[in-house]
Length: 369
Image (tube, rainbow, N blue to C red; front, side):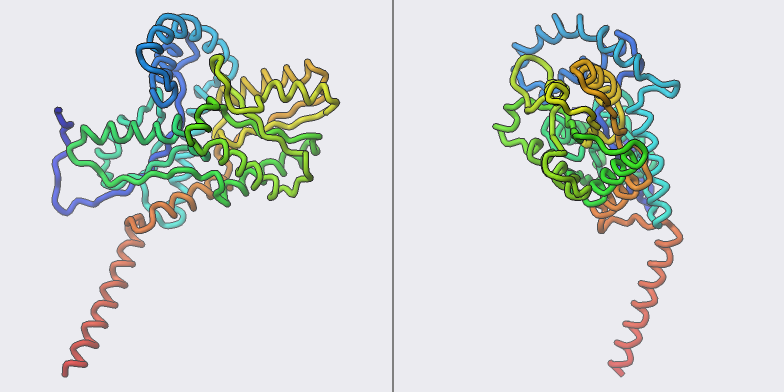
């Protein structure tokens, strides 16, 4: 195996600590060609589709990548902005805001964003961090609830990169943060603001991304962690029993997935006489196709079409100040022990340590006299 060359090592050069935010990914453009590349990478990940390659490859390349890209491109086109994909826009803004908040707290970190699928890739982001002198990297997957198909896949890609690195940086990974107090508080604040502007609904539906039901049977903690997030949010909002409901969206294929499914649930609520629903997607930290098109457009149409009176989608946390503050606190907890202080603060800490050392030495010499 050929290992990648590294920048020349310079004795005494400053070592940097880095924080890498990783989100799922997005196509480069809302076109069939871009979707074909993106879906080809995404659906080829064995963490995402746990079907033997010999059985899956003909389906993927012979059917799905011939039909799905055009349909998906049309959906992406309906949410695309002048700045590009909403998920990419918000993820980069989160990284920029997080670096500023950490700097304001006295921590000089290199904060970057990467995508598990698409651009910028995890390997390209890690290469750039190494070129900037990073010797310690904390990887923060932007998935609050752990799933093998998401969080573990990020770890896979980081370690694949490390296998070819000549100088592997110290690595740390953040796993699940579904019950992080700052994250839950930011969700609750987002809901309160929405209700202050629009009033309360008859039902608050929390829609999480679905997974095959088999993942639950195999020991994946995702389902449990989604429900814990929902319970903590309900407690923070002091909701009466029955007002909050958990559902799962984005089914793919014919196999059984985690239930109840979002759209059928919304249709059933409308037919039961529930006039207004608010839908929030706590498992998504940035608005994207699954929230802006699947929920805010398709699910809304399904609910109203079934007789519902009013449907409101509550935006993701995106780059809210309270959420970025929560991410900063979460990150610093996982960065504990690494030298993250800004240069001026680091110098002050070193000077104080040296003064303490000199005092101890003077006391020791006095005692010896």
